[in-house]
Image (cartoon, rainbow, N blue to C red; front, side, top):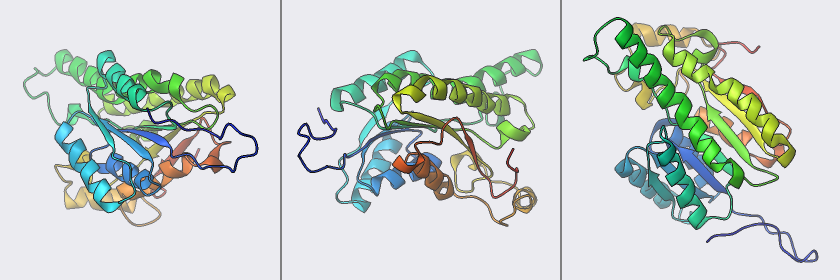
Length: 271
């Protein structure tokens, strides 16, 4: 088991710990970019998601780019099930004595990319809402709940990835609602974990180009409209979101908790 912590002897020189960072949806898009940020500090990475091959490819790419990076642990699991989340927690516990950072990034919009075989009407509505809450809300909540008792105290960090849709709607209702549900969860969890010196925050990205969420591509007119909504005049990138996540996970952000950090170029103004 890999352990960490301050030296036992009060007179010993301080040693910087190598942090243990768990990233869900860590194989592609925003999750991969987040993993890359922590790979730069040579953290112990745990990448989890549904597709084992994608996770391994990302782990290999990060190891090649950062020769000093410890070999990442990859765990393929369905985080929308209690068993899947428990499996990740068990694998983490077998290898590490704590978790420093949890980034709950896994998600999607199945209602926009499936369900064609389900009849229109209430059946389709029930499916869309159930699927979006399963994919976006349960994956974040179950992973976090499975790991929260192992979070470093003090210094642990939880970052949940939401969406601009949670603040303004998505046009379908179910996706926006499933992301918005993460906000009160973060508020309650921040209050629960705060006495342990752990922070809990949410990052809500706007339009982020080069992610699987927009894998079908946007019509040029639609993309132009989204960019025109920003104050920066450009689409966001996975790196923009990853930078915000890494800042929230930094020691200097210890007094920032229960906050929604928008990364959308000003497309949605602060509240």
